[in-house]
Structure formats: structure tokens, C-alpha cells
Amino acid sequence: RQGCRALLLLLALTLTPACGAAIGDDCSSDSQCPSGSYCDRTMPGGYCTTMNCRPGDCPDGSVCVEFSNGESYCMDRCADNGDCRSDYNCITSIGLWPFCSVED
Image (cartoon, rainbow, N blue to C red; front, top):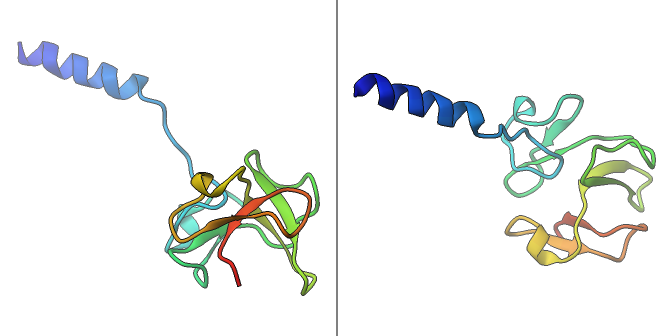
């Protein structure tokens, strides 16, 4: 019986989809973010992002946003506040696409 249980557990773990890190995820180090991005620890809870992006450069589910200081970052795309982490809002006033960030 233990052999069957172990086999079932292994099968369940094998069939469980793996979730990778995404732009906008919380983080405390760069290694927790997608390849090629970094952890912006100035944001609440950390924020996985990529700096100096261009439109079309960002991974699926994210959008390149150019801020008033001329810097551009890949940001988590959203439709409303419910799509964002707690402490973040869906910002619609900058750029073409709404994105999750903290309001100034």
C-alpha cells in the first residue's frame, strides 16, 4: 500500500503545472524574477521588472511603460484593481495599457 501511495503522490506532483515568476511578482532578490529581469526593492514587497524596455519587448502579461522621467519598465498588465497585488492599483493614466503599480 505504501508503494501505491508513493506512486500516486509522485504522479500528482508530475501532473501539477509549474508556475514561473512573472513581471509584477513580489520578490526580495533578482533570482526570484524571470530571466533577464530584476527585483525592484523600492516597490512594496519588491516588484519583478525589466528596465529600458521598448514597446513589444516585455513578456506576455506585461507592458512597457515609459514614465515622465524618461525611464521605461516592463510592468504587470491589468484590467482593474482586482488584477493587481494588494497595495497596488491598476494605473490607467499613463501609456496605452493599464498596469499594476503604486500611485504617487
